[in-house]
Length: 311
Image 1 (cartoon, rainbow, N blue to C red):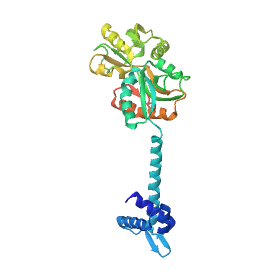
Image 2 (tube, rainbow, N blue to C red):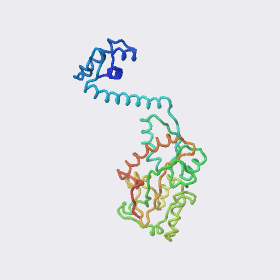
Image 3 (cartoon, helix red, strand yellow):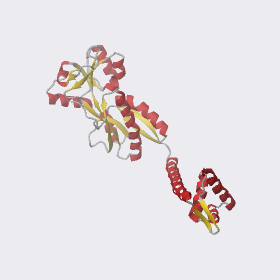
Image 4 (spheres, rainbow, N blue to C red):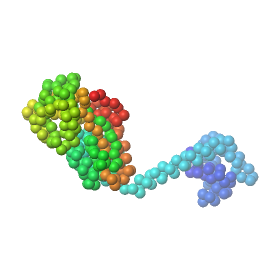
């Protein structure tokens, strides 16, 4: 059964005449009649009762008419959708990302976009506070950021909640089997971000609420330098598990969950004010299944927005 046969069949069904249908389609009447007869032979049914004054649908013909109409409508809809892609060349957007989501999300995001062939990415790594300012100033199209202030974002969506962990030298914390309460964090020499950074502000706020005095051994914003300091000086740090998951697995660091309360950051995708909604949605729809896969595989301490966490 070919599409041309369905078109010819529908033309005859709607005009009630092979002559009129042939004129409408600008084909010869014998060619049209041959296609209709071949369709009937292929289906094994008579689609028309042929009368001296025209063609009348059989019961099988009426059934096929409804189905053929839908097939051709769906085909036209598909063609229209594809024309939209053909008329819109591949677009480029810039995406800023902090180290953790950059390491985990960007490689699979690039693969997903390569399959879709709708957007290409220009990438920039930075700290959340800096990326949020770049979005506000229009210097970036999109950014993955933690807990941006409400005046910075227009297009925004929560991707995940990230519960931070305590890491330290090998064999110092129990390999994740024993949690550390927030109130005991004051006993650990900590490598922390500088006070201007979002995570540091969150930690200082919680420490004030819990009346805990955090012992700041050193302030370091660079992730790579933070790793070296922890290993070299026997210090500890409060970090996202995803950024250190490989090093923990290799035994270079030990770790423990933090509870009562947990320290939770919210990972957002945000976009600049003038970013087309379509571009924002393409990136968001590509990221969400990637985030869900990491959560399912338990390689991170992320939770989806609908999940509940333990404090």
